[in-house]
Amino acid sequence: MGCDVYIEASGSQASVSQGLSALKNLGRYVQMGVFADEVKADWNVIGDGKSGFIKTEGLISHSFLLKDWEKAFETEEKAEDAMKVMLVAKSRKRKNSGACAAILTK
Figure (cartoon, one colour):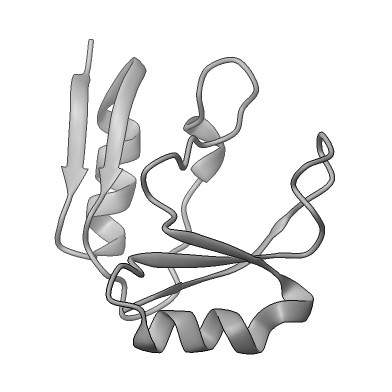
């Protein structure tokens, strides 16, 4: 029992905790709210069900290596199509080689 989809739009930690605990197995959690402070939650309960990673296709508009951080910030500030700009520590071309360092958002 539980909900198929939980959409968190308030940016409240209480809502995040409630949503994660209300999901049924293979349910979908959608984070739309913007957090004013750090949110502590067990994010390990979400993933693609196979690899444990969260799918980001369609969410990240641009991706840069950490060494190209200046270009990433410029893109986030000036590019009209920049929704979310991700900085990665290493090239993501090699399997399991890149960890997300930061996500910039307008």
